[in-house]
Length: 441
Ligand SMILES: Cc1cc2nc3c(=O)[nH]c(=O)nc-3n(C[C@H](O)[C@H](O)[C@H](O)COP(=O)(O)O)c2cc1C
Image (cartoon, rainbow, N blue to C red):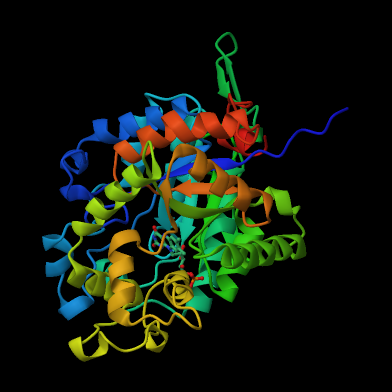
């Protein structure tokens, strides 16, 4: 019997706000950022990606307005930076009602929500979507977020991951409270559900406790698909234990190869099969009928970025307030105060021996791409690039993070996806009904 060809996974990146990662994109006439508060915007994008057979889409999310730069949220608000305006779970419920196959993922922090709330929310989404829910598990990284929840600070990064382990363990117990056949719905005998098949969770950890049972019956997937984007040593081990999809930001082919090999070996060390965890680096794609047209488009969008705002956003990503006398210093002098290790890594990756970057130069790139690799070209060139990475141990697919919405998704789905399908490296139709089933095929 012929082996099934390996196929790539595609997941769309979304933020419920004006800017995904390109800080000039909302200023384009074609941008739908004007509809950032309208669920119809997100429903439309979900339908576009589902028609192209994307595995899933996901909302990144942070529980604050960033304000490390000059101690204020002024720059991020003025420039329309990454502002997480709407709560993703509610949007996903709306998107679930206008789609039937695409996976639907929300970021939720283990730092602030109790496992009981998390388990109930994702079980509900999994029911509403008939088995398409996914949880992007984050531990939160900043004091600002802690303060929004009335806490003075966050525990250390390692403790946050230890705590996150307990939160996920407790959620798993809660999702198992109802056996799959607990609801019997026997009108004749007057038995709605069999009490012997509904159990307590009784989870007791060092930080986390929950009793259960969860009132929400077992959902179609049993538990949501787990996504993760940790980059530190501890973060990668956490992902190796739990994640079915790892989202990452890597600069070059070599960086992607290194990261992917490392994640796969950690997954194996955690006792899972490497293919049970799909590693998906983010890419930004700018398309044109010719390379010149695509380049012109990219240059135009880049011209809409306020260069100083890149400095503000690097400050915000690393939790440091960069003073003007630091702007022309080498990027290698940057360090992480608060924030995600992965963001610092990818900024440092941009500066290679022989081509060192200053903070100002890095900020220009950051404002333009947020360090996502930007592929500018024809659909065929983009497909060549993706195929090469996919076939050289860099990844199992990609998180598509286009500079402009909706145009970036629409063009990609209309021109690059058919090219990938022609090459036999991307599905022509969904094989399963649930997100997890589609990830396995
Ligand atoms: C590409 C990427 C995307 C991320 N997206 C989010 C996000 O949307 N919300 C959030 O709170 N953390 C986000 N994070 C942070 C992590 O998922 C994780 O909680 C954090 O990185 C701390 O772990 P680390 O130090 O191991 O990286 C992201 C990290 C990376 C690398």
